[in-house]
Length: 417
Image (cartoon, rainbow, N blue to C red; front, side, top):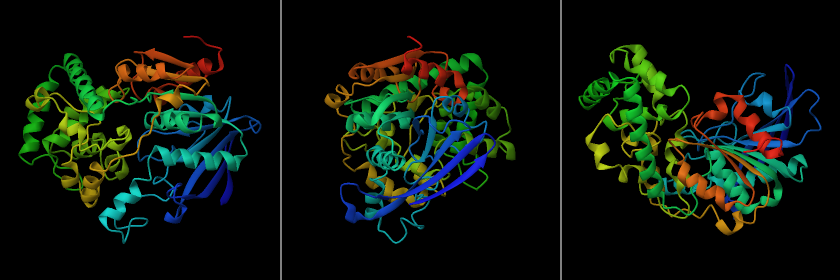
């Protein structure tokens, strides 16, 4: 265990690194390091803890400043905030390449086995280590997107450790086939594409033209990677976030030969080497006791295959591991993980017994976590307080601190549905 203290204006940061078992069910499998920052506002030293589980999978927690992340100032009025770098990210024994530690020297099969221990179940076990280290009998969890999925596993396995839970855009489908989830998100993205073209009608022809340029090998990223039509389609992920449609429109108006277009496109593509685990483990986040077998690619509707202007969202394509320079080394591991039979994450009978307040924002047209399945999951929880809103997209938590303020009110019973 290592702990240091840092200070920012108005904030104290307690930086903690703990040793954790790679496999909590088999301590002989070795250990990794897991890191978290405890953020305390001046005068907030006696407040209870809120542990933040970020979206992903494969993304580290935000690095705190007095003004970032946008929701932090609101949270610090009621809590000390624990920003956990989920295992494999940030300062928690990060996984960045198969040729670097902790994967260096392992066969592809051994690397895949290592990565199976970076999911929600082990992240929750790490949370329990930190809760015990902080001496908290209970704490509250805030889960955004994939962090909400992880919160559902927390509720399924260690509800007694939670005083409450806040979930933003992360009420995952429970006991639904993974193909059902991806099939529905394809429908949602088709509808969002049509909405986008009604707003920017000239962009349909532009997307069609750029797709043809991709097929001709003429759309190239700053690192030299040639963008395929399948990969270009994933720019549609921008349609699922606040401000994303505008950014997509401004991207499309640029000349595809310009450096500005190349850099902006690289930033707009969701799957890249910046956070490789986001691509490698993405479909596993929906794998509730099944193998994924490239579900997003398999469930693409024929209508979408035929109409290149119908954009995709978080729909990972196997081909990205053949064309992205930094993801290529993970290609064999990704194939192995696609065939892996994942363990069950959510247990409806246990969720039904998790009798604690759960405040959840459900975004009416969420491109990544379908509202229909979220409401089914909300009905499983005995005290879930869902706030269904069309005012925000999937990243509402980051877009407006009023989202967290509303949910804290629901959690504490000072605001009603």
